[in-house]
Structure formats: structure tokens, C-alpha cells
Length: 201
Image (cartoon, rainbow, N blue to C red; front, side, top):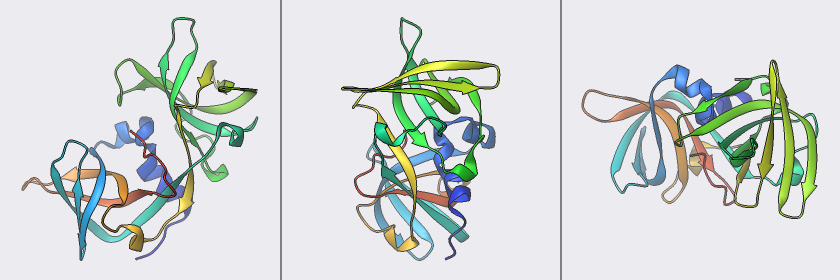
């Protein structure tokens, strides 16, 4: 099993938080690994159902690890899934700090289909203000900017290397998969949560 460059892994499997997946199509799957038999991954979804996913030859594995608001520096390129607030700011639900190699990916502000009435903003941090209860950011992208509030409840993630051997029972994983005629799925990339990370919605 080969490891692709980290930015390729994360671009394909983690951008479920952004527009890239919406353009690519496929079914968003996440849950807990029940078994790994050869090239078939058996997953228990949050709804309690079982899903079998055929892993394509040469499939890649990427990881995510927890990060902190203090890891978000001015000039960072991040993706923020958020809920609009009455005062016009965005309340972050989850934040992904992109590797530098992915700067500019999916740049812009758009609806986020993962949660009702939510938005996704992939942009550069133009300004950051640390607060006792989190941080306030100004995100800048071509044609606009957004003010974002990050509280301790937001899931903040960054990429990390991962191996196929980490797809063991109990591991939390997420992927975009193609549904097959028999109801099973297939995928070429899997993201695994490491070090207690909370996977993207």
C-alpha cells in the first residue's frame, strides 16, 4: 500500500468539509472500523448500520490530528464550516488548517451541505485575535471576507501522515465512496482520526 503525498490524501478525503466533494459527487461515509478483511473495510456508521467498502488497489490513507485555535496564525490558509450568526459573523463548527501545499484549494465562501443553513469558507487568515474563550478571525478571499468566531466547542484539525495498518477495529474513519449496484461501496482514499481527533462531519 503506497502513501500518496499528504496534500493529495487530505484533498481527496478531508475536503468533505468543502465544495470539492460536492463537485466530485459520491457518498460521504464515516464511522468506526469493525473489520478489515483483505481489501474490504467493514464500517459501523453513526446510525448503527453496517457498510462494506472495497478499497481500490493502491488506496491511500491520510490522518487528522487535533489542533488548537493558537495553531491558526495570520496568513494561514484554512477551511471553516460554520453557522451564520445574527450579527453577521460566522460561528465555527469545524476548522481545518491546510498544509501549505494546499493553499488556495476551494478558495471562497459558499453554502455547506453538511449542516442546514451553514457555510464553508476556504480562505487566508487576514487577522486573528486570541480570546479567553477561543479566537476571532477575519478570513480573506478573492471578492470578499468573513468574520469568524472560534469557540472551544469547534473541532479544529490538521493533517498528519497515516498508514493502512491504522485501519484497525475501533478506529474512526471517514471517506467519500461510490455506491455499487449491490449496495456496497468502493473508495480509493480513507481518512483516519488520530490522537483523539474528531472527524469532519
